Image (cartoon, rainbow, N blue to C red; front, top):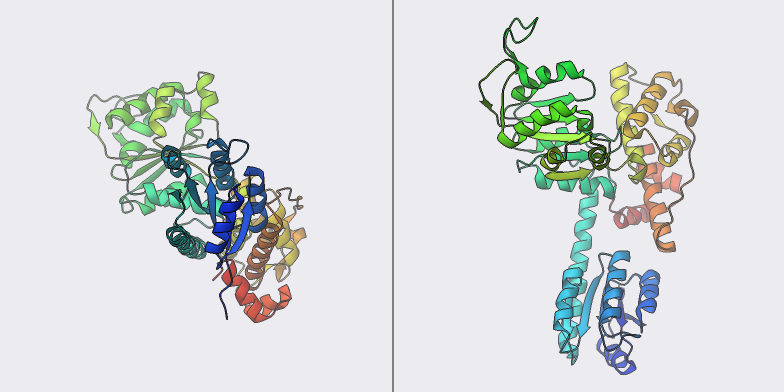
Length: 452
């Protein structure tokens, strides 16, 4: 079978140049555009893998402004597109600037068709390799980190960021709404680091009274206050060699913020009632659902402490922004809940209606709300499957509008496949029957969307 042609978009307002390039690239499906608006329209319609872009486009044919704007707009819409900037002899500085903005390469006029053909062929090859790598990443990004469940691009990015910083001893700030799993991410960071064999010590700054917080964090010496009958090691000292997780750091009282700042700067502590400085080796991970910038403006959070705790900041997306992850999480929660609640047989899964409700509901309480709903359904369900009524929630309308019809179709296919696999546990015959496609078609769809 002949290999399908590949789309190549040529953005150039000179008819002579278009005609020359048409003869040079007869092995590709060529699309032409003469200005920025046409280029964006063709990009939306055909989604070409490679683009050659002349910087001198009307109405600024003598300059590079329109070409650079076209480059920025196209990369914003399709960041994986390989754009080769074609320039005149005096435009080398602009070409280098385009490379810094994300262009794949640049080529100076006059055109040598043979060399440009080689450059375009290489761009197609690189794009193909990168596409295969993205497919492989999609296949393996479920539970990439200990305790983290998800296949969405949003959580995949969080996992990649955690893997990048795991070996570095940097103070990390996790931001996210309540219930998004900040402690799960903090534990995954600890277990992926070189400190995995040491302690992970978690403390909720909002759950301990201010009068007890200092002794809880730093410990105290015998006789430091009434009732201090023996020396007691604090949470920070207990985490020596390991990781200290300070949840809800935004609720830390100002008096304690000063003491925490000193520890982060000097890496030493003094127990309450003591005078001896104790050096410690502790990795600190902080988390909050609050806007720390607003707290700083209100005088409720120290700016110098803020800069100490956010050497690296990772934002954890809410569940409503994690494509198709709700279904995967619900399956995992159900399996764990059955074991914890002692329900070994029923229920065995979710009905199709329940999966639809789970995937469409916005989950304002995030993973915590999902876990409560599934655990309640597991406990109360009397049937073989958990129904939508067992969950006690209603689905909401999805208002997100993708780029074009092809993306709408691809997204719908991908979500339908995930739901079907969740429902029938990978039973190919049942899944193909549910989706109304043949087994070969199902295998093609699995390959297309990177589902293993």
